[in-house]
Image (cartoon, rainbow, N blue to C red):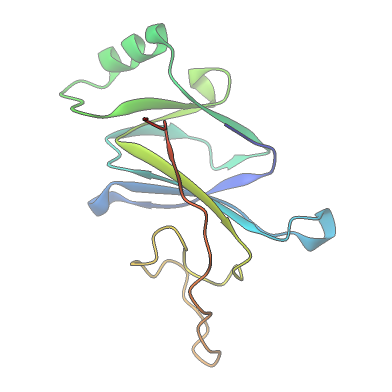
Length: 142
């Protein structure tokens, strides 16, 4: 899956093993939606703080073998996801990844992990309504 837009590291929730990357809205550049990519059950990661665009893919057999040597311990159902062409671009060892796109205002905490208050909303403004989101697990089994 290729996301042909800028994404940045938005938050890493250590206690719940979740990593959130976000592509902000930019009306001047024609991006009227916010893109979120969330990894769940994260056990290891090496990511950049910003990507101009990113291709998300499963690690090749050789890459996964290299990561298993570098990340000891049981992986259980985790998979190695690579952000780009090489491991140096970033990787996440996680149970699953979801992404979605929404026209929700950027001040909204997160539409993929709404149970957390990430950036604080301004209290003098009403909270936005629950957004419509498209959820797609990767890889798709079926």
